[in-house]
Length: 155
Figure 1 (cartoon, rainbow, N blue to C red):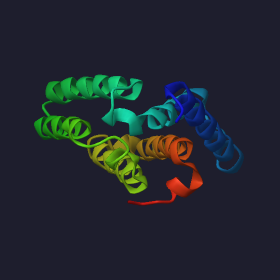
Figure 2 (figure 1 turned 90 degrees about the vertical axis):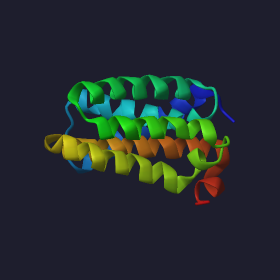
Figure 3 (figure 1 turned 90 degrees about the horizontal axis):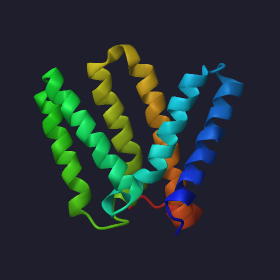
């Protein structure tokens, strides 16, 4: 099992690969957009380990805290409640359980992008691209932990 630096390298490689594919097939990307999407891939590469004491968990709770304050500031109390409920989840599941399930790593970012697009409809397209890069990074984590055979198990 690679440590967080190995997972970051995997997320970087998968993010750059997807960026290269998009830049050659769809359109040229502004540098700031490419950086945003690459950061999403890096975040995704650390996300499956939020259920254990790790760098991913540290960044996850930092992000949850910022989003919680922003939600409360904007008066989105339901969003803040959902953030609290989601932040408890890593504490009650076992390591390499739910957060290492392929279906979970696909559904959660897409669901988060769908919910965020309700509040930020102008950025809907970017939110789903962010989710796609996050998913690619998270799947690179599973690939590094389990290989191709483990990546295909849907538990």
